[in-house]
Length: 305
View 1 (cartoon, rainbow, N blue to C red):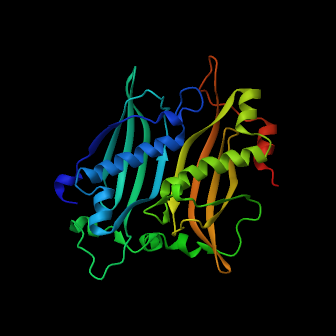
View 2: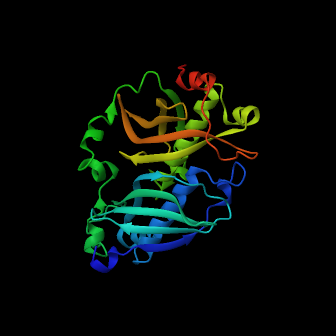
View 3: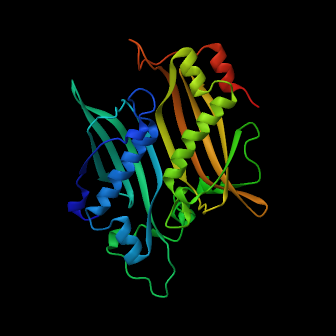
Protein backbone atom coordinates (compact mmCIF):
# COMPACT_ATOMS: atom_id res chain seq x y z
CA UNK A 1 0.00 0.00 0.00
CA UNK A 2 1.09 3.55 -0.55
CA UNK A 3 1.93 5.55 2.59
CA UNK A 4 -1.38 7.43 2.71
CA UNK A 5 -3.26 4.10 2.62
CA UNK A 6 -1.57 2.86 5.79
CA UNK A 7 -3.80 5.02 7.96
CA UNK A 8 -6.71 3.45 9.79
CA UNK A 9 -10.11 3.69 8.13
CA UNK A 10 -13.00 4.34 10.53
CA UNK A 11 -16.37 2.83 9.71
CA UNK A 12 -19.46 3.55 11.87
CA UNK A 13 -21.89 0.63 11.90
CA UNK A 14 -24.59 -1.15 13.88
CA UNK A 15 -25.19 -4.85 14.56
CA UNK A 16 -28.05 -6.54 12.72
CA UNK A 17 -31.29 -7.06 14.66
CA UNK A 18 -31.23 -10.69 13.52
CA UNK A 19 -28.30 -11.32 15.87
CA UNK A 20 -30.24 -10.48 19.05
CA UNK A 21 -31.26 -14.06 19.84
CA UNK A 22 -30.85 -14.06 23.64
CA UNK A 23 -32.02 -10.90 25.43
CA UNK A 24 -30.59 -8.07 23.33
CA UNK A 25 -27.08 -9.51 23.18
CA UNK A 26 -25.57 -9.93 19.72
CA UNK A 27 -24.20 -13.34 18.77
CA UNK A 28 -20.58 -13.88 17.66
CA UNK A 29 -21.59 -14.44 14.03
CA UNK A 30 -22.77 -10.86 13.78
CA UNK A 31 -19.52 -9.53 15.23
CA UNK A 32 -17.84 -11.13 12.22
CA UNK A 33 -20.47 -9.71 9.86
CA UNK A 34 -19.54 -6.23 11.10
CA UNK A 35 -15.88 -7.02 10.48
CA UNK A 36 -16.70 -8.12 6.94
CA UNK A 37 -18.67 -4.93 6.23
CA UNK A 38 -15.87 -2.75 7.61
CA UNK A 39 -13.23 -4.43 5.41
CA UNK A 40 -15.48 -4.08 2.35
CA UNK A 41 -15.82 -0.37 3.13
CA UNK A 42 -12.03 -0.05 3.16
CA UNK A 43 -11.99 -1.35 -0.43
CA UNK A 44 -14.98 0.75 -1.49
CA UNK A 45 -13.32 3.94 -0.28
CA UNK A 46 -10.46 3.11 -2.66
CA UNK A 47 -12.84 2.56 -5.60
CA UNK A 48 -12.28 -1.18 -5.42
CA UNK A 49 -15.60 -2.43 -4.10
CA UNK A 50 -16.63 -6.00 -4.94
CA UNK A 51 -19.10 -4.90 -7.63
CA UNK A 52 -16.51 -2.92 -9.57
CA UNK A 53 -13.82 -5.58 -9.17
CA UNK A 54 -16.15 -8.28 -10.45
CA UNK A 55 -17.69 -6.50 -13.43
CA UNK A 56 -14.69 -4.53 -14.65
CA UNK A 57 -11.82 -6.86 -13.79
CA UNK A 58 -13.35 -10.31 -13.37
CA UNK A 59 -12.14 -10.52 -9.76
CA UNK A 60 -14.05 -11.93 -6.81
CA UNK A 61 -13.20 -10.21 -3.54
CA UNK A 62 -13.23 -12.89 -0.84
CA UNK A 63 -12.39 -13.00 2.83
CA UNK A 64 -10.47 -16.25 3.24
CA UNK A 65 -9.32 -16.02 6.87
CA UNK A 66 -10.68 -14.22 9.91
CA UNK A 67 -9.89 -14.45 13.59
CA UNK A 68 -11.36 -12.53 16.48
CA UNK A 69 -11.20 -12.10 20.23
CA UNK A 70 -14.42 -10.81 21.81
CA UNK A 71 -13.63 -9.14 25.14
CA UNK A 72 -17.01 -7.41 25.56
CA UNK A 73 -20.65 -7.87 24.57
CA UNK A 74 -22.54 -5.97 21.89
CA UNK A 75 -26.20 -5.02 22.26
CA UNK A 76 -28.67 -4.56 19.45
CA UNK A 77 -28.86 -0.74 19.69
CA UNK A 78 -25.12 -0.17 20.06
CA UNK A 79 -23.35 2.29 17.80
CA UNK A 80 -20.17 0.52 16.80
CA UNK A 81 -17.00 2.09 15.43
CA UNK A 82 -14.89 -0.25 13.29
CA UNK A 83 -11.21 0.47 12.72
CA UNK A 84 -9.60 -1.18 9.69
CA UNK A 85 -5.82 -0.98 9.35
CA UNK A 86 -3.88 -2.64 6.50
CA UNK A 87 -0.90 -4.66 7.66
CA UNK A 88 2.44 -5.00 5.97
CA UNK A 89 1.53 -8.28 4.24
CA UNK A 90 -0.72 -7.64 1.22
CA UNK A 91 -4.36 -8.46 1.86
CA UNK A 92 -3.99 -8.66 5.64
CA UNK A 93 -5.90 -6.28 7.91
CA UNK A 94 -6.19 -5.61 11.62
CA UNK A 95 -9.75 -4.80 12.71
CA UNK A 96 -11.13 -3.45 15.95
CA UNK A 97 -14.74 -2.86 16.99
CA UNK A 98 -15.42 -0.46 19.83
CA UNK A 99 -18.59 0.81 21.48
CA UNK A 100 -19.29 3.64 23.90
CA UNK A 101 -20.12 2.59 27.45
CA UNK A 102 -20.66 4.66 30.60
CA UNK A 103 -16.94 4.34 31.38
CA UNK A 104 -15.95 5.39 27.85
CA UNK A 105 -15.02 3.57 24.63
CA UNK A 106 -14.90 -0.21 25.14
CA UNK A 107 -13.14 -2.69 22.87
CA UNK A 108 -15.66 -5.33 21.73
CA UNK A 109 -13.54 -7.13 19.12
CA UNK A 110 -9.91 -7.38 18.16
CA UNK A 111 -9.30 -9.36 15.00
CA UNK A 112 -7.33 -10.16 11.88
CA UNK A 113 -8.67 -10.61 8.34
CA UNK A 114 -7.15 -11.80 5.10
CA UNK A 115 -8.60 -10.94 1.68
CA UNK A 116 -7.90 -12.50 -1.73
CA UNK A 117 -9.01 -11.42 -5.19
CA UNK A 118 -9.93 -14.56 -7.09
CA UNK A 119 -9.96 -14.62 -10.86
CA UNK A 120 -13.63 -15.39 -11.54
CA UNK A 121 -13.80 -15.25 -15.31
CA UNK A 122 -11.29 -16.61 -17.79
CA UNK A 123 -10.68 -14.19 -20.65
CA UNK A 124 -7.98 -14.25 -23.32
CA UNK A 125 -6.62 -10.91 -22.13
CA UNK A 126 -7.79 -10.12 -18.57
CA UNK A 127 -8.01 -6.38 -17.97
CA UNK A 128 -5.21 -5.10 -15.74
CA UNK A 129 -5.95 -4.80 -12.03
CA UNK A 130 -6.76 -1.23 -10.95
CA UNK A 131 -3.54 -0.94 -8.92
CA UNK A 132 -0.26 -2.71 -8.29
CA UNK A 133 -1.20 -3.14 -4.63
CA UNK A 134 -4.40 -4.95 -5.53
CA UNK A 135 -2.64 -7.05 -8.15
CA UNK A 136 -0.68 -8.67 -5.33
CA UNK A 137 -3.94 -10.10 -4.01
CA UNK A 138 -5.00 -11.75 -7.29
CA UNK A 139 -4.99 -15.54 -7.29
CA UNK A 140 -6.47 -18.37 -9.33
CA UNK A 141 -8.42 -19.92 -6.45
CA UNK A 142 -8.56 -20.26 -2.67
CA UNK A 143 -6.07 -23.13 -2.57
CA UNK A 144 -3.50 -21.09 -4.49
CA UNK A 145 -4.05 -18.11 -2.18
CA UNK A 146 -3.15 -20.07 0.96
CA UNK A 147 -0.48 -22.34 -0.52
CA UNK A 148 2.46 -20.08 0.22
CA UNK A 149 2.02 -19.42 3.92
CA UNK A 150 -0.09 -22.38 5.07
CA UNK A 151 1.88 -25.30 3.66
CA UNK A 152 1.44 -27.34 6.81
CA UNK A 153 -2.32 -26.91 6.69
CA UNK A 154 -2.47 -27.85 3.03
CA UNK A 155 -0.35 -30.92 3.60
CA UNK A 156 -3.11 -32.26 5.85
CA UNK A 157 -5.97 -30.75 3.88
CA UNK A 158 -6.64 -33.83 1.76
CA UNK A 159 -7.37 -36.82 3.96
CA UNK A 160 -9.10 -40.14 3.58
CA UNK A 161 -10.81 -40.06 6.98
CA UNK A 162 -12.01 -37.34 9.33
CA UNK A 163 -11.60 -37.70 13.10
CA UNK A 164 -13.28 -40.92 14.15
CA UNK A 165 -14.71 -39.45 17.35
CA UNK A 166 -16.01 -36.20 15.83
CA UNK A 167 -19.65 -35.20 15.51
CA UNK A 168 -20.68 -35.23 11.83
CA UNK A 169 -23.19 -32.96 10.08
CA UNK A 170 -23.68 -32.90 6.32
CA UNK A 171 -25.21 -30.04 4.34
CA UNK A 172 -25.52 -29.00 0.73
CA UNK A 173 -23.99 -25.79 -0.56
CA UNK A 174 -26.99 -23.77 -1.74
CA UNK A 175 -26.83 -20.64 -3.84
CA UNK A 176 -27.26 -18.47 -0.71
CA UNK A 177 -24.04 -19.95 0.68
CA UNK A 178 -22.07 -18.79 -2.36
CA UNK A 179 -20.46 -15.78 -3.98
CA UNK A 180 -20.29 -14.97 -7.70
CA UNK A 181 -22.60 -17.82 -8.77
CA UNK A 182 -20.17 -20.56 -7.82
CA UNK A 183 -17.95 -20.60 -4.71
CA UNK A 184 -18.92 -21.13 -1.07
CA UNK A 185 -18.13 -17.88 0.72
CA UNK A 186 -16.41 -17.27 4.05
CA UNK A 187 -19.56 -16.18 5.87
CA UNK A 188 -21.20 -19.51 5.01
CA UNK A 189 -18.53 -21.21 7.10
CA UNK A 190 -19.14 -18.69 9.89
CA UNK A 191 -22.80 -19.74 9.85
CA UNK A 192 -21.74 -23.39 9.72
CA UNK A 193 -19.74 -22.96 12.93
CA UNK A 194 -22.80 -21.57 14.69
CA UNK A 195 -25.05 -24.35 13.41
CA UNK A 196 -22.70 -27.26 14.03
CA UNK A 197 -22.22 -26.15 17.65
CA UNK A 198 -25.99 -26.02 18.08
CA UNK A 199 -26.42 -29.47 16.54
CA UNK A 200 -23.54 -30.91 18.58
CA UNK A 201 -24.98 -29.65 21.87
CA UNK A 202 -28.42 -31.06 21.02
CA UNK A 203 -26.85 -34.40 20.10
CA UNK A 204 -25.16 -34.51 23.52
CA UNK A 205 -28.42 -33.84 25.37
CA UNK A 206 -27.53 -30.27 26.33
CA UNK A 207 -29.28 -28.29 23.61
CA UNK A 208 -29.24 -24.52 23.86
CA UNK A 209 -32.99 -24.46 24.51
CA UNK A 210 -32.86 -27.11 27.23
CA UNK A 211 -29.94 -25.55 29.11
CA UNK A 212 -31.54 -22.14 28.79
CA UNK A 213 -34.85 -23.40 30.20
CA UNK A 214 -33.38 -25.54 32.99
CA UNK A 215 -30.37 -23.48 34.05
CA UNK A 216 -30.72 -20.04 32.45
CA UNK A 217 -27.32 -20.55 30.85
CA UNK A 218 -26.37 -19.58 27.33
CA UNK A 219 -23.16 -20.46 25.43
CA UNK A 220 -20.97 -17.45 24.68
CA UNK A 221 -17.94 -17.13 22.40
CA UNK A 222 -14.73 -15.39 23.41
CA UNK A 223 -12.50 -16.42 20.52
CA UNK A 224 -12.98 -17.76 16.99
CA UNK A 225 -11.07 -18.28 13.77
CA UNK A 226 -12.44 -19.45 10.41
CA UNK A 227 -10.10 -20.26 7.50
CA UNK A 228 -10.83 -21.31 3.95
CA UNK A 229 -8.33 -23.86 2.61
CA UNK A 230 -9.77 -24.85 -0.76
CA UNK A 231 -12.73 -24.09 -2.97
CA UNK A 232 -16.14 -25.66 -2.41
CA UNK A 233 -18.78 -25.07 -5.05
CA UNK A 234 -22.49 -24.59 -5.49
CA UNK A 235 -24.49 -27.78 -4.79
CA UNK A 236 -21.51 -29.75 -3.51
CA UNK A 237 -22.12 -31.71 -0.30
CA UNK A 238 -20.18 -30.34 2.68
CA UNK A 239 -19.25 -32.93 5.31
CA UNK A 240 -18.69 -31.03 8.56
CA UNK A 241 -17.04 -32.44 11.67
CA UNK A 242 -16.95 -30.92 15.13
CA UNK A 243 -14.94 -32.09 18.11
CA UNK A 244 -14.26 -30.67 21.58
CA UNK A 245 -10.49 -30.78 22.00
CA UNK A 246 -10.05 -29.35 25.48
CA UNK A 247 -12.01 -28.13 28.49
CA UNK A 248 -10.30 -25.19 30.18
CA UNK A 249 -10.58 -24.83 33.97
CA UNK A 250 -14.20 -26.09 33.95
CA UNK A 251 -15.36 -22.81 32.41
CA UNK A 252 -14.80 -23.07 28.64
CA UNK A 253 -14.40 -25.62 25.87
CA UNK A 254 -12.06 -25.28 22.91
CA UNK A 255 -13.41 -26.96 19.78
CA UNK A 256 -12.58 -27.46 16.11
CA UNK A 257 -14.72 -27.61 12.98
CA UNK A 258 -13.50 -29.03 9.68
CA UNK A 259 -15.37 -29.05 6.36
CA UNK A 260 -14.77 -31.52 3.53
CA UNK A 261 -16.03 -32.28 0.06
CA UNK A 262 -15.61 -35.67 -1.57
CA UNK A 263 -13.82 -35.67 -4.89
CA UNK A 264 -13.31 -39.10 -6.30
CA UNK A 265 -11.86 -41.28 -3.54
CA UNK A 266 -10.62 -38.36 -1.47
CA UNK A 267 -12.06 -36.05 1.16
CA UNK A 268 -10.71 -32.57 0.45
CA UNK A 269 -10.76 -30.18 3.37
CA UNK A 270 -12.14 -26.84 2.28
CA UNK A 271 -12.30 -24.98 5.59
CA UNK A 272 -11.29 -25.25 9.22
CA UNK A 273 -12.31 -23.30 12.31
CA UNK A 274 -11.60 -23.09 16.01
CA UNK A 275 -13.93 -21.64 18.60
CA UNK A 276 -13.74 -21.09 22.35
CA UNK A 277 -17.09 -21.37 24.13
CA UNK A 278 -18.09 -20.70 27.70
CA UNK A 279 -21.49 -20.44 29.41
CA UNK A 280 -22.98 -17.31 30.95
CA UNK A 281 -26.05 -16.59 33.06
CA UNK A 282 -28.78 -15.35 30.72
CA UNK A 283 -31.06 -13.43 33.10
CA UNK A 284 -31.50 -12.05 36.59
CA UNK A 285 -29.01 -9.99 38.60
CA UNK A 286 -26.10 -12.19 37.49
CA UNK A 287 -26.81 -11.90 33.77
CA UNK A 288 -23.63 -12.11 31.74
CA UNK A 289 -21.56 -13.74 34.49
CA UNK A 290 -19.56 -16.79 33.40
CA UNK A 291 -20.38 -20.02 35.22
CA UNK A 292 -18.39 -23.08 36.22
CA UNK A 293 -19.46 -26.23 34.40
CA UNK A 294 -20.61 -29.08 36.60
CA UNK A 295 -19.79 -32.76 36.13
CA UNK A 296 -22.93 -33.46 34.09
CA UNK A 297 -22.13 -30.73 31.56
CA UNK A 298 -18.50 -31.76 31.34
CA UNK A 299 -19.45 -35.39 30.77
CA UNK A 300 -21.84 -34.40 27.96
CA UNK A 301 -19.21 -32.25 26.24
CA UNK A 302 -16.65 -35.05 26.40
CA UNK A 303 -18.97 -37.89 25.38
CA UNK A 304 -18.84 -39.57 21.98
CA UNK A 305 -21.64 -40.99 19.92
